[in-house]
Image (tube, rainbow, N blue to C red; front, side):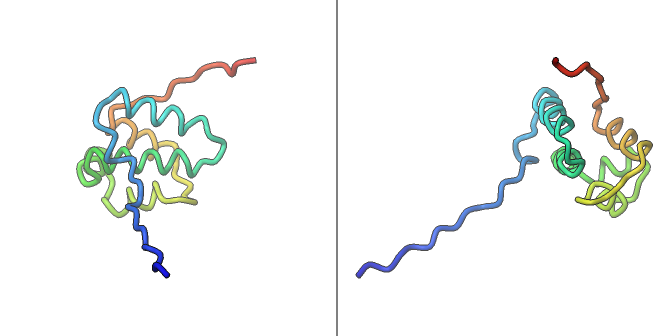
Length: 100
């Protein structure tokens, strides 16, 4: 009998693939469309990691740990915090009507 082989996989990290503004904008737009707010927070966290969490925290005027907490699943960050992070990332909210 042949023993089964054990397969290992690396955990997917979107931050590794967010290399340009177009992919970042598309990624955040899709995440913002999800009804679960944790999806958007996770997307913002991935973009912040891709850009350098310490640098984004500094630009946003937040401590690095505060930024991690604000973007953690289940967090309920203030709108102003989200705006500071998004400004630091160089992205803006865009509002559009839902398709009928």
